[in-house]
Length: 91
Image (tube, rainbow, N blue to C red; front, side, top):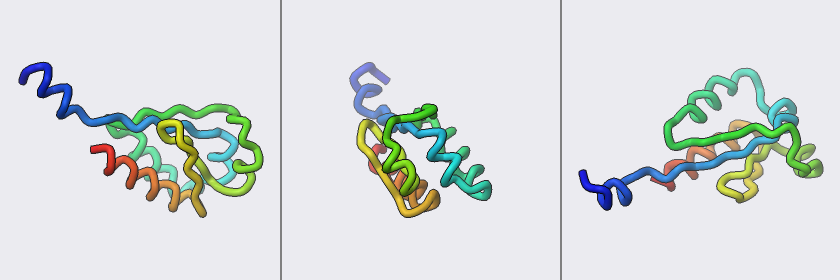
């Protein structure tokens, strides 16, 4: 496979930033395995920050910053669904 073909067939990465405090507040134990499985995919890069200085949003609902875009959800399960949908769109 030549360089140009590799360049255009390469999956795009999804970069996800989380706030540790937000995860502690909203991520339930029963969803932790699902999040781990999703975040371990090869086209997912994620990082947990101690604080992202979004305190008002952090108190209200689970969120993530995906490729620089703020994504909020009703609950952790809904956030995971949104993340999976974004990941599918990147393929």
